[in-house]
Image 1 (cartoon, rainbow, N blue to C red):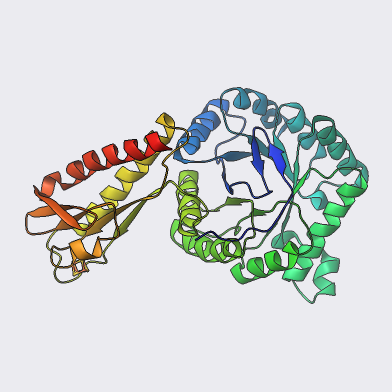
Image 2: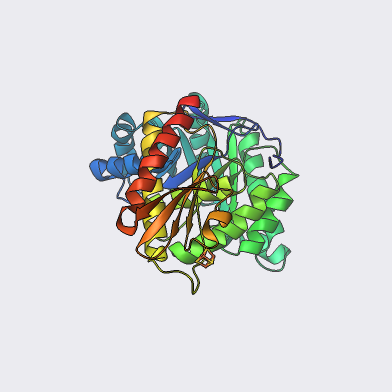
Length: 371
Ligand code: SF4
């Protein structure tokens, strides 16, 4: 089922395009020191391999702004510079090759300083993401709406967009974020009817890998399901590669991206006689790695989603795995290899993972070749 998408303007970020019905691109942010070119490049390459399509680095110092040029030479996905407070950093980031900058004009300073940043972006036709967070909402808007509200966040973002439009620039992306999931959803619902700029969507400060994933799944799921959003970032207190895996799963679950390897597994019960929890985790890690390898080898990826079932027993496993392309079901000291619900063969427990991988590799290659 295809989720309806809101019509937004196209914005080019390096060689990628967001908005205008293009695929929703996955972003993350490095957590290395941007000044440390080697560490930052290594992390970006890992993120790229995991499926990251746009990466953002913080630029808190002039040394970091200068490092962007060297980082950009060594990576192949668009690089976004994240700037707070200092307009000179924003200008330096653009001059050093940033493909987009993220600023909150509210903390960049005077109108003249914002204008200087906009002028430099305009000269190079670099998009600006106007990013507003609930935590930095202006006092006047808090008073006007009787607290931090979705309406206040939207008004703040649109005020800043108008400020930049009045300076003659409209190569813009908007983000409005809140760690309050319901407020974040509401703000996107309010904003979407008021602008056609592409939206960068995320639940900010969502928390650790567990709670951040649940909150992002709920928040992004509801926002994206309404057709809102052109690029996403799952924000987790953890390894940024986790953010990419989560973003891929959210988009895949909503049918907004095709070509993933989906693992389904049973919840286990009293019939389970093998270490299914361990096995399911190993299968998930194996498929994550395999997907990345396939994407490296075949840039167009898989022609369709491939579903892998990991079931705990032979009583219900094959039937429950009928929807899957391939699956395994545990027994006592052995398991079954299943394809489209049909039992293919018995396999010793310790060989289940390798046999599954072998079958999956040939299935993926077949689907990738078609892609
Ligand atoms: S597939 Fe078997 S082990 Fe898993 S929950 Fe169902 S009955 Fe239990």
